[in-house]
Image (cartoon, rainbow over all chains, first blue to last red):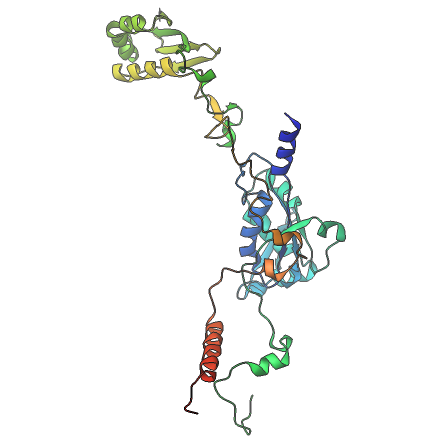
Length: 178
Length: 185
């Protein structure tokens, strides 16, 4: 293999680092997106037997949004292996204990259970907040688009912008807002 | 491909050295037909031998044909190829017409094709003219200087316009048209 071809090979199979902002995202829907990047399924060279998966850095995993009543309803199962060792932990309890656990389990569950899955999971880095170590952040060259728009709180919008916003009518002066 | 096929010899789809471009080199070297003279399971191959075998040998002078009668064993064809492959095929209970077709397969195939696990269903000697794909192909050059994470690259940009946005745009338009009203003054 000539030198030019060798470099071509390195370029084609280079690992890209992606960043994904989990803020206000459904972990179970985003897992299907993250999975594709981890396994390299977004690349035209994808084949199950070539090693073309990318690294995904997830930030703000503390701010994920579960569907409906899932924080109270969803239970995570664990069994120690001993009799009576089964335990069910609710999603909010898991999230209080480790804010990276739910998104990690969601991505793990979205992939097929084969020998490659644990190695693929090693390429996923999760951080509960905005802070990412500098040596990891300098590798990141791409951002994965979120699925849902992140809502803005009314008290975070500048006041003059709120005042300028069109209204259908003004409340009367003596109107009591509950 | 499933895991049970991992042990098979792997390869790509290709013709051996462009066979047939200048002249055709027959790949089948030898075929051994084993059969029983009495059993019903060999009925089809006995018919084939009686009716078609001499013609087959005449038309394929490069193929060595052996017949091996053996008592009370099921019929079998063993084909040997130029590349050293050996294909064993059971012809038990196969009819005359089926056997004619299978022998034709053995004659025309190039080595043991069915025992190869195809790594890909396509193969080319000239993979790409414009150069192979890299992760940087078709990338937005703005990403090179962007400070990630950035909502500009991270927010979903494929959502339809919300009703709130539509209303606001309608309001903006109305305001402009009110300013442009021409009065008689």
